[in-house]
Image: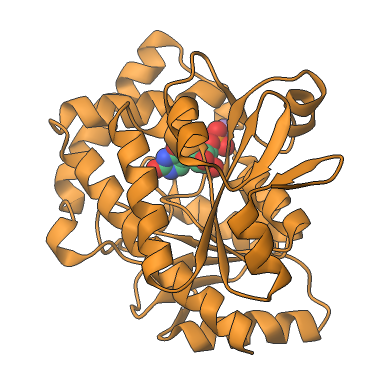
Amino acid sequence: MRSNNILDIHAPVAEALAAGQPVVALESTIITHGMPWPRNNEMAADVEALIRAEGAVPATIAVIDGRLKIGLSDGERAALAQAKDPMKLSRADLAFALAEGRSGGTTVAATMIAAHMAGIAVFATGGIGGVHKGAETSFDISADLDELARTPVIVVSAGPKAILDTEKTLEVLETRGVPVVAFATDTMPAFWSRHSPHKAPLRLDTPQAIARFQATRKALGIDGGMLIANPVPAADEIAAGEMARHIAAAQDEALERGVSGKAMTPFLLARILELTDGASLATNIALVKNNAILAARIAREIAAA
Ligand code: PSU
Ligand code: MN
């Protein structure tokens, strides 16, 4: 392990970075707050293996006992996946967890900050946070969107989760200058479903083209990240109409119970899992794996450039 006063970089990740080999960052809120044990740990281990099979090195990012970890050992990952009351860390509280010796999963925003500090340019997740439905009264807009605007990391997702307001999420990303690139499709993917009614702002069809686009932004002095929206494989998708019913039911329940803030996304995901009899979880796992493979291919292109 290579440590400085802030980061603990797992040895395989440190070696790959020093040698200019491709590395893919992975978030950990999906482990601590997005999926139940033990599927969360199995998913995370499988995703790491897929990235290795594509010739890149996985770096799962998390905070353990006040240390910002860039890459976890199998034991650290399994412990985090079973941790009692881990924090859900974003830009606002990442430093709090370090200063106070706490543990937690890093959201897309916090993972981008840590990845960029470590020199990692590509990151795979399931879905980003965005503008929640009803944001005009709740003001619930994820810090992930601001982070995409300021931190130069390519984030591979399956599109904004269907629990969000896709149109408003796309509007905020456009305002903040974040390119949204659908991979090999003209419509915005909708997480559990391959298509939404929304046209994708941009489309690219190869990992090379994505790497070239980000390099060109950098050459222009344009800061910030980019969101890749990669549709879930057809065999794993759930029809948008069916998901819409479950999402509406989960949202009504969240309102009734007064769920808000950081608790909203984990509550909705857990409730939708129950309402779909586990089908939403199987789809979520399949799309994260699919995103990890694309992220590894993009990382390879960047390393070869
Ligand atoms: N998508 C999932 N599962 C998750 C998340 C997204 O399928 O657990 C997490 C990500 O870490 C994302 C976070 O960054 O939810 C967004 O939370 P919020 O809306 O509170 O910013
Ligand atoms: Mn929020």
